[in-house]
Length: 267
Ligand SMILES: O=C(O)CCC(=O)C(=O)O
Image (spheres, rainbow, N blue to C red):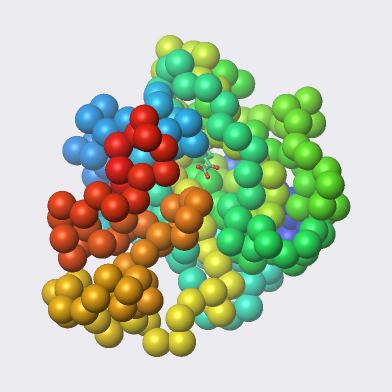
């Protein structure tokens, strides 16, 4: 397949939508695998996660058919053009937006590069796959076209955003430094999306220390050593989470050390 037109669109606008990329049978299979995790038991813990949204992290441990989109040939052929070989899957989570959800704040997914002056090269590529139709009013992702090339001083505004409406089975592939957000859901239905995100191959430790020292081994060391191994989360933010929680929970399930707002449960 010739993906050059998609690559050109991303270079120009920061994103491209590909309809009909995933067969309905795979959409249905993944929805069935996710069903046990989407029982409205765990709604978002803050405004970013969305108080009216459910998020399922660690997807490859829960819904095996998600691998179909993680390694989707067309999506990866596009990502190949933007990231050096050996890039990594940085995140893969499901987001089910329920009625009443408000818009997220605009953000860039490759936020780890926020300390670098803009405009800067992208450090990651994102995809969001529609498992329900993304409509005008059910929480479709919103993007700000061209914002991947903005200068430092420019702030995002809702007036510049466009809604990414697309039928179930479609994907939006977008540049990690593109401003976007989850939209408001003013409908009476839900919107399920899954967002695999990829990062540059050098955004990692030289030795994968959490495999060198899995939780039972890491637990023998001091807190400081555990943090240095990677049982830590970038503050502020959530880079380093495991299944939406602080990785030290794998060493000590009662760990409640990180609390970034007093009115929220520790994560
Ligand atoms: O749910 C969406 O449409 C986008 C969510 C998002 O951008 C995020 O949580 O990082």
